[in-house]
Amino acid sequence: MTVDTARPEAPLDPAAQSSLSTAAARNLATTTKSAPQMQEITSRWLLRMLPWVETKGGTYRVNRRLTYTVGDGRIEFVQDGSDVRVIPRELGELAMLRGFDDVDVLTALAGRCVQRDFRPGEVLVERGTPAEQIHLIAHGRIGQTSVGKYGDEAAVAVLADGDRFGENALLDADAQWDYTATAETAGTLLTLSRADFTAVLSTAPGLQDHIHTFSSLPHQRQNRHGEAEIAMSAGHTGEAELPGAYVDYELNPREYELSVAQTVLRVHTRVADLYNGPMNQTEEQLRLTIEALRERQEHELINNREFGLLPNAAFKQRIQTHSGPPTPDDLDELLCRRRGSKFFLAHPRAIAAIGREFNARGLYPDHVDVGGQQVPAWRGVPILPCNKIPISKENTSSILVMRTGEDNQGVIGLRQTGLPEEYEPGLSVRFMGIDERSIISYLVTTYYSAAILVPDALGVLENVQIARRRD
Image (cartoon, one colour):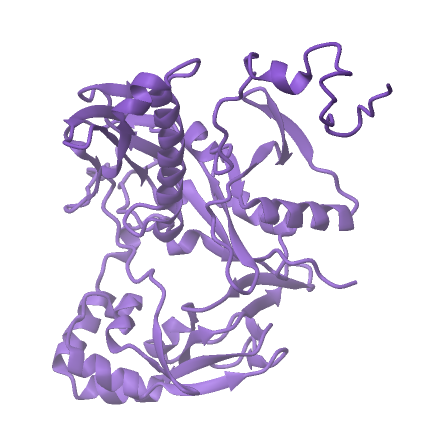
């Protein structure tokens, strides 16, 4: 008799069977099993690349030099149908109004802001013309261009939601636009003219005192980063009197407290007793729980509003793409804003978009070795994937680049080791007991945070278009 081995073995007539069937023999055989698998596990490059600093006491204080840089935040708006209004307190993000808290005056200024809708390609301000108003961008993208050294048109910046331009026009009657601002998309902005600002200023003595104080700030004692200047003399001859100097510090430095991620792992004693071989059930449960905890840890390091890298990146270190997709020019602009960039971090789909833009220009990124793996790089800086970076409904994302380490005044991870019942550095597994249902409980805990030591340690390329464009 011929048996078709390509199909399940059919029952044989006992009288015709001459040997033990494979179906019956399988009941006596052992099986080869894999360890439990988990699709959620990713490469977690951020956790691997961040240098981790021991944080005793659960708090890390970032001491910096005193800086006069004020009003660097984005401005927020409220929308009522097609009407857009600026939130009065948000005007405090303007440098000249930083710290001014008279709500009535701020409301009067907000009420004088005039809404203006613009179309793609519309010229909003022209280079060389008088600057008589400040523009607050509620929505849309605006490109600024000027004339280069050799007479050609040069891109200056790309502005988006929450940005503004023309702030100096409110106090300088002779101000002129030194660039041309052109709308790249449709959008809305609010305009406050110098005349309206002056009208409110004339009736608000408190605002007059505030503006006078702002105007008298020792601007000559700032370096190009806004830090208090260290007075010194160089290149003198003879017996010139040397200036005295000291390094002033921030009076209220920022402190980062360690955050926590916790879960309770439960295992029934019957499972641990009877089904613990050939694999240790508790160990396998614990391994997968820790993997999920680490994934959540990386997500928080990217997105947490208190210490996450995306929400806490300095506004001056956030730039917009010039055309939407991530081009080599955009990556170069990210790199040129800081020294010693260690790595890029981008969503895998954003990395694919980078590859498409490179290919369209006939470029092929280099590859570098990172931890024994070959990864793509630009200008020698590796481009690492991180699926925790969000993608918006409009198919846009962000690309991060950072310098790392305490010695480099970069981005660092914070943790505390030496915890009771520590299982991994900074992660503990504590036995919580057995309840009346015979269930064993373990408390799995990890403490972590991240700190940006100086603002230019982290840069973000925002509104990166990752969808494939139609040819």
